[in-house]
Image 1 (tube, rainbow, N blue to C red):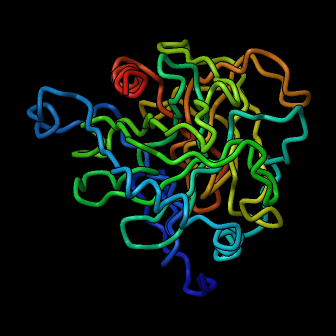
Image 2: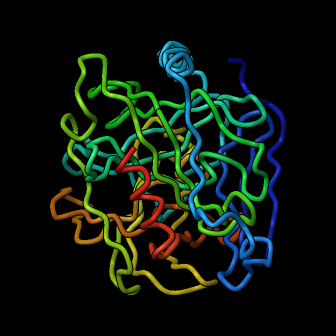
Length: 308
């Protein structure tokens, strides 16, 4: 894939910014306060979860599509500037559960987000942001050719590549850009092994009180890493804009990355409970990262995936 040389386009809604690169999208969506849910969302389908599935043929094609050369090219296709002072390379014990989520976006461009393998009944569930799956408020604009590479680091794929079989998002995201969280189901690997049998799975906490210290992780498209290395921010969560916030300057490519509580960012030890995912930034020069508080809607999305 050729380098993307076109300028960056950013959109603002209130204080928050989404980042979109022309050609290659590395979106961090703008947060919408919970009070902004419209009558359209309230009148939506009684099923609060929307599920998108990929055929066996599409999944085989996705695995064939994401070659080592293509992955290398997509990392070089965009540069969102220098890595900020709050984002540090993660140097603790290997995080098998966190990886890059590669896909072709709704405009036909190669790109990526970050995602996390989580404990689930089917041993195959992955959490990320809804905007890594589909555009908000635009039901027809969905992403394709999606694979998850757990433990990705500088070109290495130590635990293999898993094709995404289905993606669940809140109906409120599909219609109104509210509740930016998604749960994916991935196929077994080519040896027939389920995802969490290979890499383990992070526990998830729903309705966890805001206010504790978390580590946010992601494959930010900032230099010198350009998505090749996992970065992290550490901060104490606060309520803001109907979501939760930590001081952080991770940017595009880190979307969907986990917020881990009870986790030592230096050693990689601790429970590492997933309490949110990277969803949005506060400005063009970010100082804050926002993530949803995982409540009833997020639990329904997760439950739909873990039964898939």
